[in-house]
Image: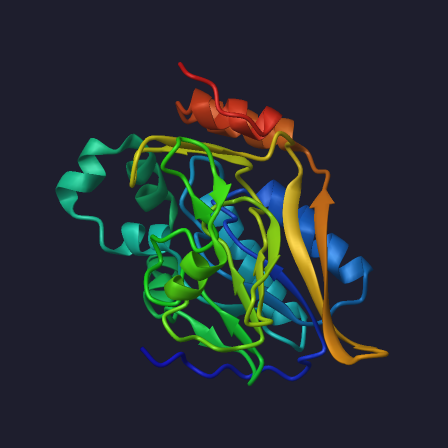
Length: 270
């Protein structure tokens, strides 16, 4: 698979975010924090509108940001973006959260997601994907066979890169902020999740991903000069926001599991 090339004017410093999951409250706080820091370039790694909070308002905020700033957000799709626009009538009827999302979103939002690329070769040195370079459902950095995330061995991560050789590879999907340096010298950055700090899933096995904090997560990635030459600096940012408002909306849409995760950064059995 050949990554699409993106129009990216400032490769020396950018903010990377992922997994907004319809949380307009968290997204608004993150974009304000990015703006306060004077960072002009933003990349969005997908899983944008799926969630029981505010998909329409989240889409509208992203579109308003595109109109307000000279540098558009470079956006790729995630697995749950596909899940929305590929949903069959049966899938919509059997999933109350999907019914809510489809009812909320205008056709322009569905079309926008459908046109998003799978990945992006941002610059010669920086590559973006949602899960892994070959599969948006794969956890690039974590093995969850035990039910909890454990960082994969070096060789295991390299194999999942499928030959992608960029110096910096930025991903999302797991919702766990993490930066790893490989034996190849490559830097792998998982931005964490803007809008959903904990969840439980049963693919590939039942497992929990938890950050133990309600904060919104994103990362700042900079190219810097050191005594040894050019290098990359990564800063993981945890932004406070009105997570109670997000939790209340999730609960009102019959997702107490989401509400608890939004309030605590933890998964609770119901």
